[in-house]
Amino acid sequence: MQLNTIQKYYSLDELALMLGCSKNTLRYNPKFPKGIQLSKRRTVYDITEVKAYLESNRVQ
Image (cartoon, rainbow, N blue to C red):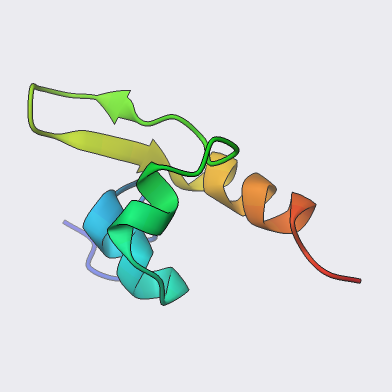
């Protein structure tokens, strides 16, 4: 098991902590990438899609 690897999928809680915003800001934003539903209560987000979303919204 490698400890210092970058995850490919993150939960909404983890993304909100990394980006410094609330979960509802991400959840109800129509432009934010849709998550992958693992179970009824568990949704994860692909970090590559999130990075692409952030790059498209970057202020130049």
